[in-house]
Image 1 (tube, rainbow, N blue to C red):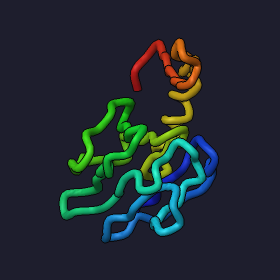
Image 2: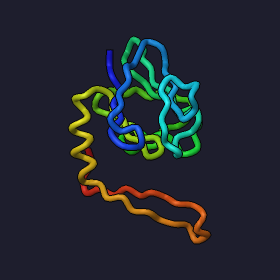
Image 3: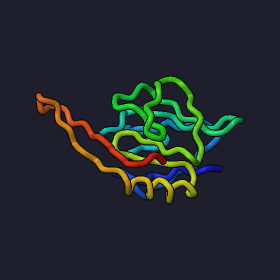
Length: 133
């Protein structure tokens, strides 16, 4: 059985066991995994297991779900394993403890910049790095 580790965000330090059924992840209490991140949708994504390994599927979340920094399309199951890190809102998670040290080292190279639209009503977080994981 594989565990999900929350590395960054309001739930940093928590972990969850992945099971044989897809687990819904989001802000609302009816999810299997509840994240206290205001930038995570009520029903954000699913994590699950198939005969071929683990997958993630975005539920059409407002802010999107990212695997290794790439936004994934909603409604499509994307294979993931311990080499991948997943971000939703300000939350960063990984599968398996082996990957957590790698992801934390990578985060040390990332610079976060805030950009504001001219109206001042929307904030965007821009992550810049000098290397790829």
